[in-house]
Image (cartoon, rainbow, N blue to C red; front, side, top):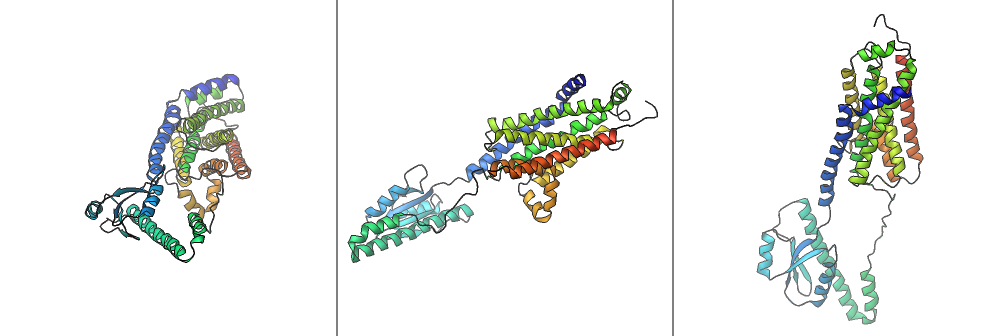
Length: 380
């Protein structure tokens, strides 16, 4: 059995299909995802709003406020002090998002801008700042006229950011929805292991390949031969999944959470599930290996599609229409295992996904063995 395992394992590692689709392709696709989604995250970062300030009269308080909000690593505004003519020219050329005319109060002009979501947000920020500044200045001025002794407490109260709602994170994990693409990428690697299972069956059935005919004539128990071949495929799939995870986590720096050993466990069990699925499909009927492989690839990619590999919102859409499908979709189960590890503090949901993968693996393996046992041939 060890002899069979050794050479079946070497055959798997030397297979061009394994090297291309289960080692090189996930690395390439993961790199593409990282580059594409990294740019998206960078583009979503807040940028300081460019404004022009026209000082129609000197206002020391306003200058102090502007110095505060334009300092630091994440300033609210980038300010250009100019006269009215220069400021209007900058606004017409869309070099700034608005003009602040400063006298006893602050007036804003944002006309002349082209439409667009980002630009409209910047216009709103400029207007909101001017309104808040004017209301705060009015309160301070009124306090100075009525009771100047209350001025320190009023300034302190105005300096505090009052919020009726407190934002409390539901989890310490990374909730970036772009991570779903990487979860499903590992699920795809696991399910593509079905090719290994298919050709394992073809190589052990006399009516499907010459190698299968020779093995059936060999003086050894078929159950031992099939078991060693299946274990060799499990070992090869473990290497492929581990390489993909290692590249994503330690080279690209993708955040799979802090429970890294369990991440590898989920990925490896996903690989076992994919291989056993191929073993089951390969045991059905008398079609050649290429046909069965095509069926497995089509089924695997379909499962990955509904799990969110191509469109990250697909799994949520499926959940609203047919939630039961996500519970039996192998790709969804594998990706959900990674999600549960990253998001939840306990292991209850993760354990449920692991048990589901184990049950599916056992069912596919038993089905494959039952379909191939005691198969007799009229001639070889």
